Image (cartoon, rainbow, N blue to C red; front, top):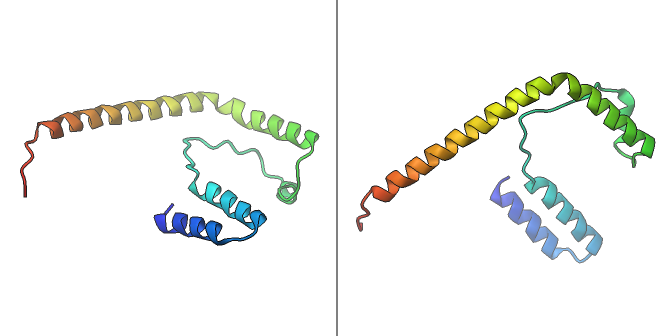
Length: 114
């Protein structure tokens, strides 16, 4: 997210007199600044009625159904999940090693005044 948008949300939140509207800006800022990092998305089959349910609080039965459908979408892909996460961990470890090497090399470069 850009610094401008973050600053604008903070500015609007400070200027608002109503606690309810201020809370709304706080929630918007939290959603906008949240980091969405993921390698894998599990998406259950789409059902037209789910779009309407987004606007209401789920019932206990709805939650049970969402969990069951999520499990059904996930179980067949567990091998792919294991492989993908192993690859991601390897990339992360390699990058960390390269960062450490670069840091050591930069520490050895003499600094001169300009």
